[in-house]
Length: 130
Image 1 (tube, rainbow, N blue to C red):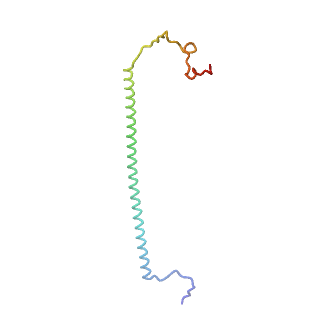
Image 2: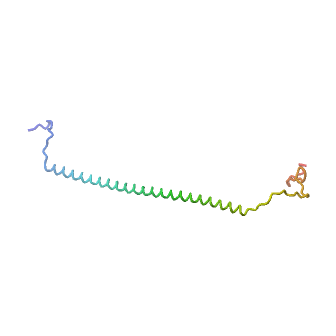
Image 3: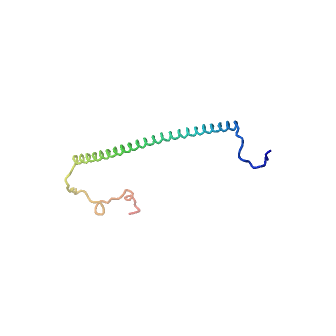
């Protein structure tokens, strides 16, 4: 009889039950790993679709930016043409008067200190200041 307290040799009897259990455990692990791989494939596929969408959006933004820049340049060009036409029209329809000196009416008197006393009504009616 063997001593139950003796060190083990590492060998044990491998039965059909052990083999069946190991086979089932291996199958379960394979199924679990297949599920993990499917999840990863789905994640990669979704990521690739997102990258494709972002690249398409980037192209759209680039095209939109170029169109906006072209429209701004065209608007600036049209603004310059409009200003030139407005200036030309203003010059064509300008009223020009030759320079001359206004004759002074002899009845007009210059204001103070030489001529007409110009004060506000309050100052004129204020008797305390006089």
